[in-house]
Amino acid sequence: MPPQIVQLISSYSYLALFLLIYLQEIGVPIPLPNELLMLFAGYLSFKGILFFPAVLLCIITADFTGTITLYLLFYFCGNYLMAHKPKWIPLSDSTLDRLQQKVTQGGWWAVFLCRITPFIRGYTSVVSGLLRLKPKWFMPIAGISSILVCGTYITLGEISGPYWNEVAIKLNHFRYEALGLVLLIISIIGITRLSTILKEKKKAKEKLQYEKDRFIRLHMVSETAWVTQGQGVHTAYIELMELLAGDRDIILTVNGEGKGNIFHSHTYGPYYFWKGWAYKGRRILTAHVIPDSSKGTIPFWKQLFPLTSLYLKMVYSFADVVIAISPTVEKAIKDLGVKSDIVRIYNPVLTENWARTPENRQIGRKLLGIKPNEKLILGVGQLQERKGVEDFIDMAIAMPDQKFVWVGGRPWGMFTEGVQRINNRIENAPANIFFTGLKAIEDMPPLYAAADVFLFPSYQENCPLAPLEAAAAGLPVVYRDIKEYTTLYRAPYLRATDTAAFIKTAQRLIDDPDYYCESVKTSCQLIAEFDKEKIKNELISLYRQTLDKYFEENKWGSISSTWAKH
Image (cartoon, rainbow, N blue to C red; front, side, top):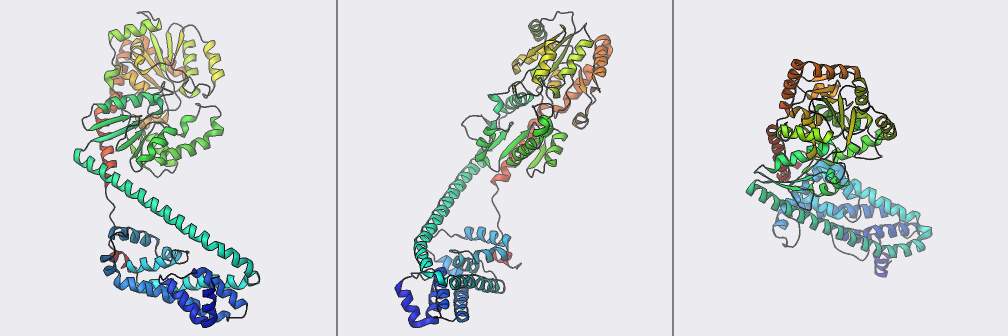
C-alpha cells in the first residue's frame, strides 16, 4: 500500500476516503485504484481503526457523487465539449450515434452492467451524459450500482482482514497485472477499431466502384472442379458458369485467387468456408443436397443422419442467401431452422448443349458398340442404392432383347453405400447391360443421342439434371413416381411406381411409335419450365438485390428521439 495513501487516511480518516474515491471517480488519477482503496478501507474497519457502517456510507456517497458529477457535466456541456475536443480523439458524432443505438437496444440493463464492470465504470457516466440519458433513469442505476460495487469491495476487505498481509502483497503485484491487462485491452480495442476502419474503407471503395460501373463481379466456387465431377452438381456449376459468362453485366471469377463483390458457391466443403469468409453479407449458396440426399448414398447413413443434418444446417446458415433448387429443398432447409434468406431458383437447362444430332448419335453408338437397328435404353446416375441402379439391372434381366447402358460411377469411391453388393450385381448382370463408369460432361451429349429411351429410377432427388438433359436430347423420359416431382414439375411427365411399371412403360415406348412420339412431346413440355434466360434473369436480380442490401448504409435514429422513449 502506498505510504502516502496510508498517511492521508490516518490523518484525515473519512474525509480522505471520500476525496480519494470522489476524485478518481471524476477522472483525477491517484496512486491507488478505487477498487483496492475500498478493500483497504474494509481492512481498516476490521482492525477497528474505522467504523464499518461509516465506511460504507462514506465510500458509497463518494462514488455516487463522483458518478453524478461526471454525468451532469457531460449531460449539460457535452455538445460544447464535443465541438471543442481535440481532433485526435476518435469520438465522432457517428460513433456516438452507433454507441447510442447499441445502448438503446440493451436498455437500462446494458448501462447497469457497464456501471458494475471494472475499468469502464467511469466511462459509463461520460457516455450516459453525452447520450443525454434522462436523470430519472440514470440516477437510480448509478445509486444501485454504487451500493453493489462499493459494498462488495468493502465487505471483501473486512473478511480478508486476518490475511491482509498476504493479500496486500498479492494486491501490490495485481496493480501491475491490472495495468498490463488494461493496456492489453486497449491494444485489442485499437487493433479491432483499426481493422473496422480498414474494412469500412474497403467496403466504401467497393460500393463506389459498384455504383460507378454496376458490374456484378461474381466469384463462383465449386469444389467439384477438383473432385467428384461425375455428378449433377458439377454439371449445374459448369452450365451456370457458361450461362453467366456471356452476360455483359457480369465479370466472372472462378475458384481462383481473384476477388469479386459477391460470392456464389455450389458446394459446401472447407473451400466454401475459406473463400466465403471474406464475403460476409454477400454469400450465396445453391443447395443441391439436403439431409435426405444421404439416404442410400453413404455407408451408415442412418447412424450419420443427425450429424449430416447438423452439418448442412451449419452450411446453410453460413450463407446469407440460400438458393433452393426445388420446393422439396426449400422445405428441408426451413425444417432445419435455418435463419438465412431462402429463394427458390431452379437449375437452368442449356438445351443447345444436349440437342441430338446425327453425328452425335453415330459417335455415341460407336462408342457403346450399339448397332444402328438396335434399341438402347439409357440410365444415368451414381452407382448407389438411391439412384435405383439395382432396379435398372432387374429391368435389363426382364427385357433380354433390348440393350441397356448405365452411365455413372462412384465419385466418392469407397465412401459410397453398398459398394460390394452393387459390384456383385454388376458382375452377375446379363450380357445386354453395359456399365460405362464415370464420364466427363463433354462425353454425355453423344451418349444421350445414342439412346432411344431414358429411365430414371432414382428414389430421392431434388432438381435432377440428367432426365432434363435426356429430354433436351429428344428422348422420352420415365421417372420413378415420387413426391418430389409432383411439386417440382408443372408439366406432365411419364412416371412408374415400381420396377414392373418401368418395364411395362419402356416396352410400350419401343413397340408403339405413336406413344413414343407423344412421350417425346411430353419431354419438350417438361424442359420448357427450366428456360435458361428466365433463370439467368432471376439470378442476376438476386445478385443485385444482395449487393444493394449489403452496400446500404446503416441508418441510426437521432439521440434525442431514441431516448425520448425512455
